[in-house]
Length: 187
Ligand SMILES: Cc1cc2nc3c(=O)[nH]c(=O)nc-3n(C[C@H](O)[C@H](O)[C@H](O)COP(=O)(O)O)c2cc1C
Image 1 (cartoon, rainbow, N blue to C red):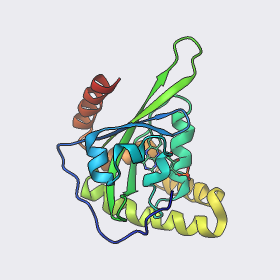
Image 2 (cartoon, rainbow, N blue to C red):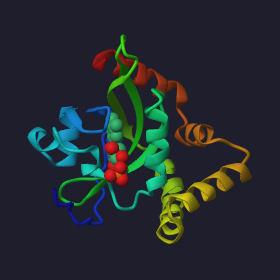
Image 3 (tube, rainbow, N blue to C red):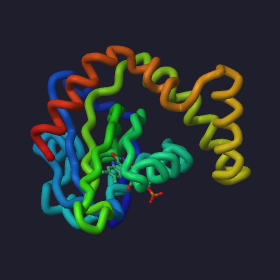
Image 4 (cartoon, rainbow, N blue to C red):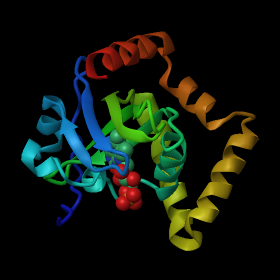
């Protein structure tokens, strides 16, 4: 499927609504809630069966998705701040978390569900230059170079990726509450 050309138009998400999507183990979309359909600008039929990279924004560095897949393919969660691309080329920022479904017999991952809400403005402002830098590094030295940079960035701040994102998102209690509620609804 052709990717839209990004236009500099931000979609402001509601703080009261959540974008939920479910994929198979490889990231092919199986389900998207109404808000995902509304914000992405794709119909449900256009989304289902497509790889989730259908909403990938070219401003996102590859290393973020590598970290994400490393984590979720072990059945673990990761919180990430992501800039996504809508069908018309506009963009929206989300904070996302994941929930895997594990086959109780084979122990294999059957599906992943992502729960997203609007990213706080401060998180967007902090991540924008970091992602720009990671992207620049990737363009020259590939993902190996951006991974090294990210390690250095976190070491210098005596923090881990998870702590850094958690501190940035704040409202941890509220987010946890939301995530627990979403898991109950969609699992
Ligand atoms: C449940 C789930 C949700 C995802 N949501 C997004 C998303 O909102 N935006 C995005 O760019 N990638 C998302 N991805 C990651 C994509 O599958 C893909 O790895 C990413 O867009 C990078 O594209 P690439 O792997 O083709 O380089 C998601 C993956 C899973 C399993």
